[in-house]
Image (tube, rainbow, N blue to C red; front, side, top):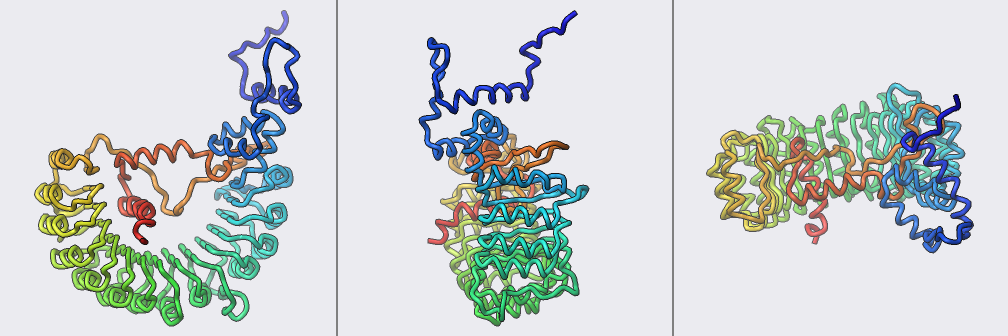
Length: 534
């Protein structure tokens, strides 16, 4: 009894890959088939490498892997034109780093991620990567707990072209961050989250020298730090800084904000979320006269007095987000000041702020450029306020109402008002019925209406960081053997289908069910940024 021959159905992916390799010499040589009756000519040989690389950008991760196995030329083109790479940064991949970056020697954007249960790459591995990838411009480190200050110092010395650095859940500290600031003269964006080496005894983080040296740093984001105040010298002395985000960091931040206000600040965007900040901090921010975007989110010590100072001095304010956390410390008085002094306001988000007809009427009358408005979780906003907005907000394009005591009567007022309105979202307003939504769609055919219980509604997931960012493919997630390359070049591969689906959903008005304001208004802001600035 001999072994039965394998059937076609039993062939697997490995056998397919071997067959692809077996024809590669014929493809490379460009020779004709031995059977003169058949034309086996490879027409891709007529394509320049640049065109072939451009085609690869539209393929998913799996298809791109398979294409790299077709022939040596395709393998070479794929490796030379893959500029973005994400690695599962476990210690086991150290032995593969040299061969990996022999193939992918054009990487400029690198992400190293390690889960909590695994041992991450060490300083030695980080140095190897920095030597092989001298042209890195963007680096993201997540969960690399074995990397110390020494490794970051060597990494900074080798990767001098770095422009963006994002670190999270790592163990190195201020010395490593200072090394990046000293050696990476082109650094523009710095994001630090849960950096365990930043503790109470940590050294201060600052620009090299006396702090007066020129810098290209434009954005700083600090998240969930125990002693984020060590960044005070850096934030206060960086004259080129445009964006500052401080989110869920412990300690008193009034002093840091006062240091910023005393200098010649170029800040145009400030985010304060879940911080110990009082009106003294807001008054300090008001001295930054160039501020155009301000987020005050769940800072219970801030009140109308601080907001009034900001409104009086920051006359260029275009985007204002306030989450009052239902503390009733920010209300009509502060919002009336915004209406009076900030005529360029284009986007306003109020969450847990009990605004009334007085302040909303003033904003609707004075802020003629207002295009995006969200009113959420307020017990004082009813039909009268909505009717006022419908009557006076002629430029309004996107309107969101959530968790307010609004009825069908208020929604009905939008049928004749807000002539430029293109998107309306009404959620968790218990008195509003589905019939008014259907009626409004009939009255205004071009208006996209999203309400509770809509059958056409879909949920689109949006990550809070990212901010703002494509999810990069990962390498080496398999259990053993050679790490698996699943990355895409130039961000055009792995999630192409997902991004297309999200685009289609957005065009048909499918909004995110949760995270209403943080998702929808972030996207609206980016889409309208170009038109808003003109």
